[in-house]
Length: 153
Image (cartoon, rainbow, N blue to C red):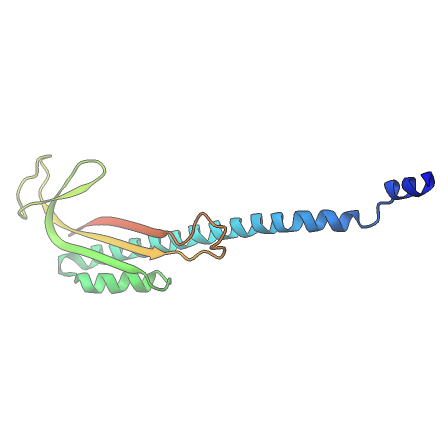
């Protein structure tokens, strides 16, 4: 009987299979979580690029730019489906405070910081990220948002 117990204590067959079965789900969940986080950062970067492209387009177009055209441009530049863009302006504002905020003003008037009021446009884009692991993710369908303010010449 003693020989029977010793044989199974030293037998190592199948141990690696059990270790793999225990470690694989944990590693898979870890790698999928990293991939999910990376995809969310990629989408955030795409959204920021689209807002920057919209700002650049409106800057080059000047004060005659249409807010509808900029909105369409941002949605097309993002390459993401269902991006919602909001464009305010062009209107006359004074840039105040930190972080920058717009205060309504009459065009050509002097602002409180001795600058001249000008035409500004605010561009905001939002996108709802859909996670690849919705049950385990901390990024369960967050709303990603980017915005910028551009002065028009």
